[in-house]
Structure formats: structure tokens, C-alpha cells
Image 1 (cartoon, one colour):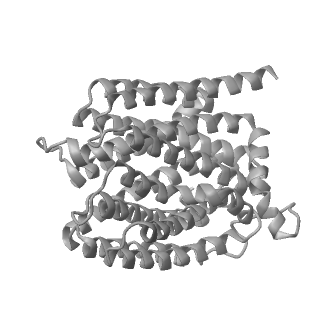
Image 2 (cartoon, rainbow, N blue to C red):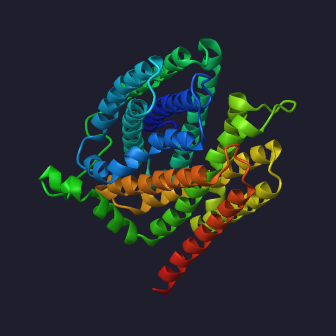
Image 3 (cartoon, rainbow, N blue to C red):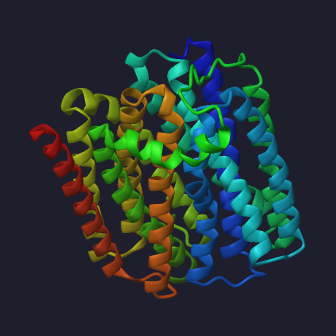
Length: 415
């Protein structure tokens, strides 16, 4: 696959975009949570996380229709340029110490464009690799892209040491993220017109009607494909748990944990957790294609859910820094296995004419569940994040996802 020029270029666009995404997310998180000039409580952290993910969940069902009508090459090019301009605006807001709505609205805009780009990348993949290689191609693209996001976050931590952790330093760190967006735009311009699809559209020629129907069309296409619907149940459960774990982990490293040998607290400790989770993503890239060939996608997803549920129970009992790091690895591994299987189901079983809208619905499941879980955890967690019962509740969510996934496929088999 790497000998295919189009696939290599699409990978490069993804890597540049997600490196920039990782930088921006970590820079905003540092500005809100680890900036000595600001004070953060669980709700402030939840709002900061929500603005990174919620916007595309709100506009995605409508933007998905545009991905099935517009030249996806042009979407990748122009959206990355718009994103670069918005990052400059957010950096200025941070520099002048502005908090509250102006900061969050700017971050919402950046995150919304980012989700549009990532959906466009996923919808474009079947146009640069053969259908028979979708699982392997998607595994490499998504996993390496997630690792690139982690590298971007790690880059932010390094730059904060160089520029400082105050408003000025946070602004400079945020500004560096435009490099990835500009590089991604330049790489996207190398594709031919219409090379990335859509090949055709059966939509009403009136764009407004096509956009307004985006969510319903994506939902109908998902329901008509039972294996995709079952995968969405599993993915939704994982994202709920991931949201709970993310919020509690940030609070634990900020307020509860202290340095212990090579394990660090504070922002450095968050960096260690990100690296460990990225290692889990890398293992998922190696394991997922083999497990799918051995067991098939449905069983692979259920095993991942079961392993993740057990890990959450262990974490609830042994709530410590080593346990959090082990959990980060396992959740990164299991969650990525579930995501890769869901991606492959969508890309291989949904028609190209509705692929953008199904991926838009995918993003609603992926991000809205996360935001809901983060908000709930913020309302229920103590300030220091020491809430073992919430980790126990996360295990129950995984079990519910397992049962829903299994039941959906059983109903399909009976039908």
C-alpha cells in the first residue's frame, strides 16, 4: 500500500493535520488546567475538553452531506487553511489573557474545522487503496495518525518548557500548531481534482435540502447496515468510558498525585500517560488485522470490550499512578481495536454516495458520548479526581456496550 502514491499523500495530510491537532489540544489544555495564571476546577476542565470535540458533533450531520457533494480534495485544502487562520485568532486570545466565551468560541471553531478535515480523510481513503485492503490501510492511517496526535501533544509539553507556562508562553505554543495545518493544505493540493471523490451523488440538486437531510440519511444508512450499527454501540460505550477516564486522570495528575521515581505528576505526568496510551495504539495497529482474520470483526470487538471492562474494575480497586498508566495502555489498545473495526465496517460496507454522512454520524457517536461523559464526571467527581466508584461505573458501561453489540448482531442473525 505504501507503494501507492495517493495513499502515501493521504497519510501525509493526515499526519500533518493530526500533529497540529495534538499540539492545539494540548496547548489549550495547558492554558486552562496547568497555567499558573488561571485556576481550574473540574467544570472548567470539562468545558475545555468539550470545546475540542463538541462542535463537529453538532454540525457534522449537515457537513457530512457536503462531503458527499463537494470535491474532497478542495475540502482538505481550504479547511486546513481556514483552520490555520483560526489558530492564530485563538493564540491572540490566549496571549491577551482572555478567558471564558471568547477563548471557548475560538477553540470551538478550530475543533469544528478539524473534525470536518478528519471526516474528509476517512471518506477519501477508499479512493486511494483497493477495497480488499481497507482494514490494513485504515489500521495504519488511523493508528499512526493517533500516534502523531500524541507526538503533537508531547511537542507542546516541550515547547511549554521553552516558552513558559503563562499566557504569553501558552500563546506561542498554540501558534506553532499552524505549521501542521499549512503543511496539510500544501500536501492536499497535490491531489487531482475529484481524485478523492465523491464519484457520484444521488442528491437533490438544491444544496440546502441535501445538507438538511444529512443526519437522517446517515442514520438510515447505518440502520440498514447492522454490523455498522452494532459497531456504533461498542464505540459509543468506549467513548463514554474514555471521557470519564480522561477527566479523572487530568484531575488526579493535577491535584492528587505526586512525583514517584520516574513517574511524574502534573503536566509531565500527563505526558507520560499520553505516551503509554500511544504505545497501546501502536499495539492495536499490529494486533487488529491479525485478530480480525482470526476471529472476525464482531468477536474482536467483544473481546476488546471485555478486556477494557476488567481493567476498569482493577483501576477502581488499585487507584494509583501505576494503575492509571496500565489502564491508559489497555484503554488505548482496546479502544483503538474497537475504532479500527468500526472504521473498517463503515468503509467496506457503506456506499460511497452516503459515506460522508455516515462518518458524520460516526463523529456524533465518537464525540458527543465523550463530551457527555466528561461533563457527568466533572459534576460527580471531587476536585482531586479520587473517585474509584466512577471507574467502577465505567466498567459497567463497557459491559452494556458488550451486551448491546452482541444483541444487535443476534437480532440480525435471526432475521
